[in-house]
Amino acid sequence: MNLSGTDTNELLRRKSRILGILVAFLVLWVIMIACVIMIKEKRMVYLAPMFPLSLLFFPLFQQLKAIKAELKSRTAAEAQ
Image 1 (cartoon, rainbow, N blue to C red):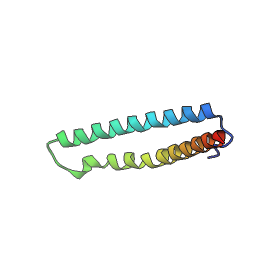
Image 2: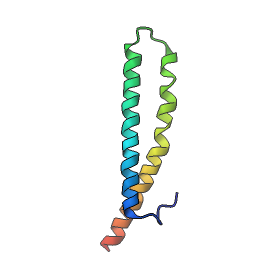
Image 3: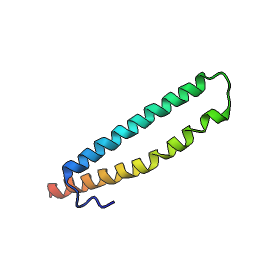
Image 4: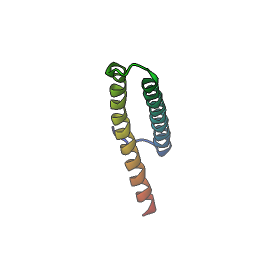
């Protein structure tokens, strides 16, 4: 992902969008865990959908990390 050619406002929009998606996934994940806890039958089959959902976090965190690094480098360059 080449972020150096992207406008700062676009980077800020991407950052807020990714943060919103991460919060939504986290809320969904907590709801799913609560549903599994509330189910009387303690079977591992009910935990199966949570593992792929947790794997979706990693690419989003990587994108967020790259955006934060680019924004930090831009603010450091502007300060000089």
